[in-house]
Length: 111
Image (tube, rainbow, N blue to C red; front, side, top):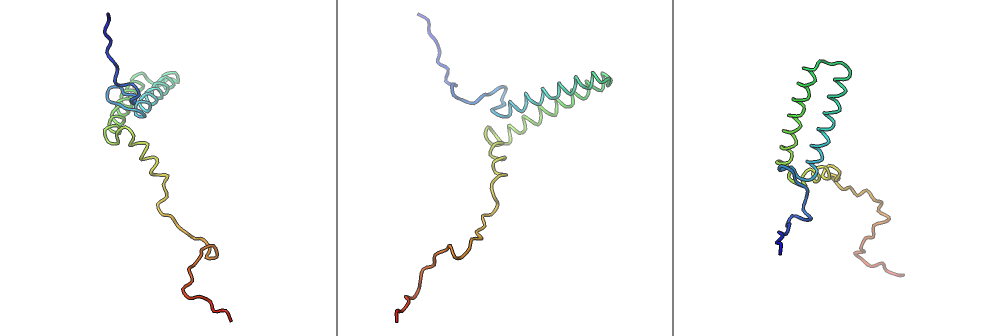
């Protein structure tokens, strides 16, 4: 009878070469965008040397920046950073006093 190992990583986040979750999508989207820009530059008539140099430098910067973001913020850190920007710095209460109930310190005398 055949023996099968159980995959313990089911339900975990997506990971490829150390890139986790949203960084992997940023990396793939960036490489796709660089490829499209490279093709457009080549079709317009820009020199091959310039196209290859631009593609190489841009891809290197993209890889370096993506891996540094992954190392700095971790799996969910980038989402937490973007959510933190939407939090208000201060909560101000400028409500009207007529809606606030005050406790009476002295009872009113009925005459």
